[in-house]
Length: 512
Image 1 (cartoon, helix red, strand yellow):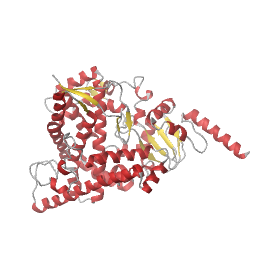
Image 2: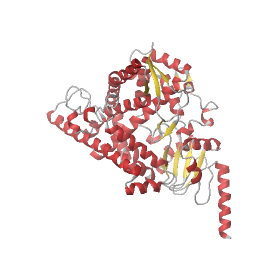
Image 3: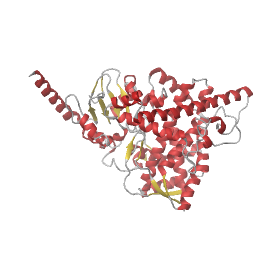
Image 4: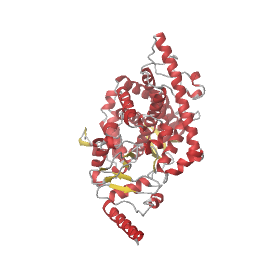
């Protein structure tokens, strides 16, 4: 009888909880595991639907084998998590364990003093004018010598190209030059993709699969026995870590040599081909001179400051992942959106054609281009969700109770689709919603639009990311017309970063 009463009470509590919080169907012991498993291939849409029905834009998911998960699209909750009670909502071990094999102790995957020390170090480097100027120089070199020739070739052959792949390759070459001082030449379509790029893809995808697994014990068991996807992950991580370790070794050798001879060069920092021992093979692009520049690339800066090799390796791997996948994802979706919106395309072209050159100051002033990028990332954020874990019990501003150890997730994808935040036209691509008046961008709360996080962990590379994306958009749109092969809406796939399923095949023609 006592057991029966307990079951009835649990069912009543479950019903009341769903009524007030619009949480998914939940059952005693297994929680929402059935509904979660049924929707595992469309989690972002399932969560968005539930959040849209919730009066507080917050839901609670309980499932066997996983921590209680609170998912919110409420800006007040997001500010509370990312700023007001920052110390109570670190990433936490359950999250850092998912990416730990890949990112190690890099800045994106640690908390506390280790995060704080890396944050201060990276903040100093990202604020320097010389690094920003180096970024623009690298962008100019990559666009003129690689991106334009590739797209011109597609034009001449009247062919089709996967623009998503092109942008990912371009972003990878760019961030490798800026962060490591090497050029993997992954944008060169006449050669196989470099091992580091392939290993990055594999490690990112399998790590994301860990996070989406209905029961975490499954991937942990596979890791323990080194089988299946976990074996592939271990092999991919070995390539990534081994490649970066070797680059660091060579870089330190050159920096020491440079210091001892008191010589510096003003050319781009690139490691000589023969020093990489086959990690990149013939894909290392050589510039005039073999000495490493001790000032330009991020790796040289971090090593020159006397930082530990392993910490530097984990930091630059985090920056490689962020610099490659986030910007290329945002650009891919923007090119699709402007291709299907004639009015926006004309307005964008008007701004871009008025520019005489693309220097740092001109790029900062491209407000309509920035509005287009923000609107694209509102609908298709590069990072779909981000999770923290509660250190102590708490109560969110909307009244949701948080227990110790709960996983608390804010959900940029769902937030961009909330009528309460963006109005009835929430699904429309309207860059003008980002302006107070013509030419004057609105100040939008980062807790309403948290695509770059917010609070103490706000993205350090935010402004550099906008500069990179603006440069690519301006360069491509002023010179080429991009037309998607398929007119239907692509499928958005949320791995570590969101991308288009099957790529983005386009026809390219020279703009008259």
